[in-house]
Image (tube, rainbow, N blue to C red; front, side):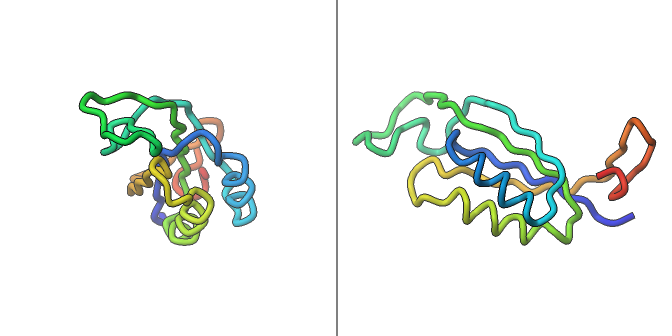
Length: 115
């Protein structure tokens, strides 16, 4: 069985459409998107605010999950970084995980075949 990875992206709400279009061009066939609340090390401070917040403020974000063959991860990461980058607070974070197995319930297929 080939290696499988999960890419999890937490980012602001505005970049999803272009990101999905670019991922589709390189053969990504499935994506899960959830609206979430969160903040990073800036604790919810907006870029235009002068002082950092002392108490966390949760901001609307989106979490994008992609499960792919491990060999495609670098190319997909390049696309994600390019599409999300603004150079401003809130561009997001990307997490990459190893996946032990994927099972398609309907057919019983496992591993890369289940993707």
